[in-house]
Length: 313
Length: 262
Image 1 (tube, rainbow over the protein chains, first blue to last red):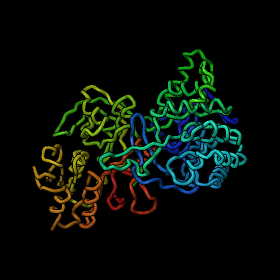
Image 2: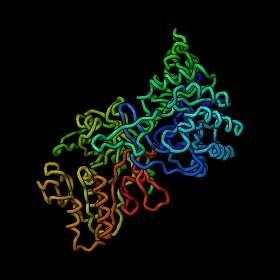
Image 3: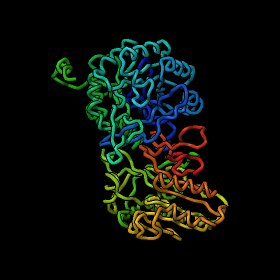
Image 4: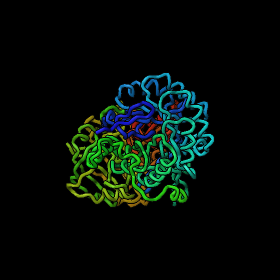
């Protein structure tokens, strides 16, 4: 059974990665999971300087999901290179550095610095964090800005450049098309959806920032529809993200157009979810009589033309 | 504030017993040898209360007591997760992650440990009591609750009580009770161990500082993972080196001088 796939010549051992911000820097959970069995690890978002993140409360559980407002708390790219990268380099899985920034220049600076290091397989650019004042969603909800960031970063690296898109726009496919045209190698679809929760007795928002990002199984149907929409307009690989808890969930994403998936919120409950999903994907492909898990990609059968569906999206 | 290095274990454990010990407070006993043998007072475990998506996240609980290969928890029903736990039966199984967090700092040249718990803040005290008794420390325990029916003294020693409604012990807060006890006593012989609601811990921390008594606090945090990956449970640090510490991996126990409660 072939499980691997590649983006811009970089081979991933299987089609299951772990999502940024849900697996730390890979070392926190090494007691609990053999990270070498993962297709790849997307690091916690890295900014030029360390970020403290938002005041508490940062996490609220909601039905089948959770809201977070972490605010990109991270140790900064310099400390990452010194303290975390040496360990990550010893792993036999693809390390994708996720970059967050509050200006185009900062994205470029972080990427340039990481380009000088060994051990990074590619980059995922976070232009879609809903929980910071500057950057983040301001970039990701502006199609022209999204295109510009991609175009500025493209010439800086020969490694895979993956743009992580937000669902908090009217037509995510327009953004996917823009980054494809600007030279991105893949898109990650989707980041969290803006949501909120209220403490009715205190009459206050539960999160310190009022709104936060919704993730978990609650958003899976939305994520599937977004991946499906994006798959109609781009040829570059799509990495499907949103509420995946099981291999069956991952199969759905592949069928609607994802070439790979990322496991996010499920890691908080069971850090071995990614490995279990990868095992389950292989087993499912075997029962389907396939020789390559990739044969599931874009393999959904539907009689309805996309042009008809488009009017509903 | 130091990070723990003992390995975290994810394991399926059996429920040995579950009972309501006093009004609304449950005791759950789990057979969890791998975790029991490695735990120290102040640490916690993170439990998956069901198998589906509601509740989605694990729920953190202080390890209330360890007896051989058994772990005891103490909780009240506040939502889906704790309701599910309160209906567990003997032989049911649970997916548990632990031990997590940094234990209470029990070192020091104090003679008397003052254990101060508000509401379910008493949860870690039976385990702490066993530990301190082995260290030949004298213990005085202060327990506060809304009403006398909610007071448990199980596996604690030398217990003084305060209730909001005055149905048992002092009418007032557990911090008032401690203040009364401390007045006129030399401070250097004592060390405070506190656990309870944030506002209580804040008052306790101020009293400890005013009385120059060393003070360890056990905090709660809204966390998704309990392992330092979600970054969901910050508490403000006092040293200004970084703005926040994480309750899950740098706590839940902190010296009161190291953090700022709001």
